Image (tube, rainbow, N blue to C red; front, top):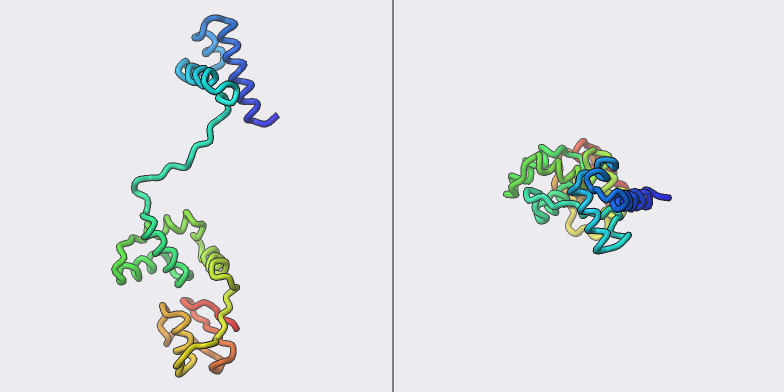
Amino acid sequence: MGTREQLIKARLGMLALASELKNIAKACKLASVSRSHFYEIKRAYEIFGKEGLAPRVRRKPEMPNRTPALVEDQILSKTNANPTISYIRLAGHMKREGIGVTPTMIRYVWQRHGLSTRAARLRWVKRRNGHAGTVKLVNIPNAVSEIEVLHALLPSQPPSLCLLPAQFGKQIMARHSECLAILN
């Protein structure tokens, strides 16, 4: 018997005890339940029957001061572009672009989506983009150098910070604290 059935059985027993004793106050005292709660249970049983005694599933409340969905989507898209930077730096980048966010707002959005750690954000980016950090260098028109190619792939990073040990058209690996590793 699960907890749901046990709870229904206990509430039915309390209602039976009250009808047997013909004294609701005494039955409530014996069952360690307030009288107002007893009357709620009794009303639910009268209206819905035995199923009315089961615990109700409640929806998660929506707080009035929660970050708007549009801003949350912008935060997540910026996180997708820059998964390795902190929420403080990301807030600074977004403020410079004219998006009114605070570091706390970004941190709460990350917590709701399970992105509080750098490793979690990198895993999320890999899952979201549908690849394990791989980018194929095909059809990049007018690319003069490897740095421009990488900057086309990672536009949020300054091109001078990325080291490219490969020739154009071959595997390019960008290694920097702000750059993702790009292979293939």
